[in-house]
Image (cartoon, helix red, strand yellow):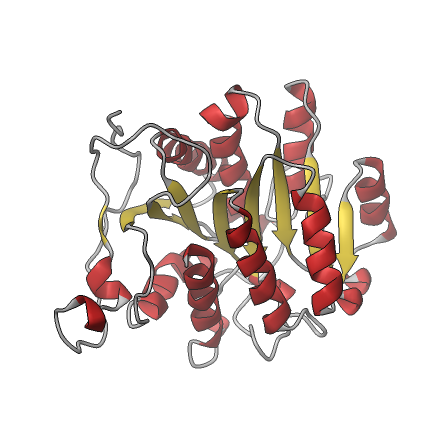
Length: 320
């Protein structure tokens, strides 16, 4: 099938990094990633080793509405910069489609455009890799997944969130704190039930009202203090067994502030990076990964590019 053009605002920019040679044995990400262009590709077939397409979602609007530290709109470029020098060991093709950007407070329009791009990529048999943006990125991702052939054809798609927060706020205006309640309501309106699980919930950073909402919606969650490697593996395995395909979303504030200082809400406790990395490997190995995004990097508050490098490492793990 022919993959249609995507509604991006910023076309793919040149990637840069260290040069060790032109041969495959020397390749780094900056040499391997090529611009995405509409092309004839095989029809979508499950969630296996599909070509990956990077799509930036440059948005601060949701964080601003949620009264957080703005700056996440610059994250897609920062993650690409961190990915560029990494050695490229992947066996899949990786393309870059450029960025959808949210101007001023036009969040809903930006989410709709990103959602359309994601649907087109999914229906063309690609694995979209969305670089946010605040965690309002998640609702853009949901729009793309919900509109895709995977859902239209009846696959049960679960949403796994690696996050210190439920992001189930009931607010009159959508923000980075509302996307999963928005998903639940949209699923209910479509006659479906949201299958939603969270690894890394911080009890002190979620009110009793949010825990009640999570219970009402049947949300599965694992507290940050309970996230041993074994507990996280068991939790994720149980969730994967319930679904045909998975949308994975990573809010970098799930990690300790020492590992991920460059986020809107740094974590006092957080889940250790080896546990989060192991979850990513587990999801990748399941064969059920349909779509992924990574959110809440704020380069303005990063230290030595530490958080951007962690984000890049997790993307590399998920695609490996």
